[in-house]
Image: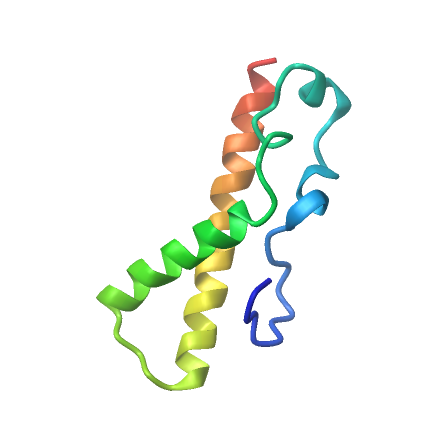
Length: 90
């Protein structure tokens, strides 16, 4: 994760590793996660972080690190929900 601040939380999987947890049946069925370009999830986290910073202006490093962790957890939840919906529709 770019600038993860040493977070010990499980952040979103990145790059090729993002596709490791995709079931073979889902990959064969054209699962969108297989086609996700490397770094896409990082860009999404950064957009979420930008939005959080606009609404919660925080300057100190600890606060920014916490906002990044929040953005990472939010992206991970959305990614998993979307993935589960795709798998349930197969």
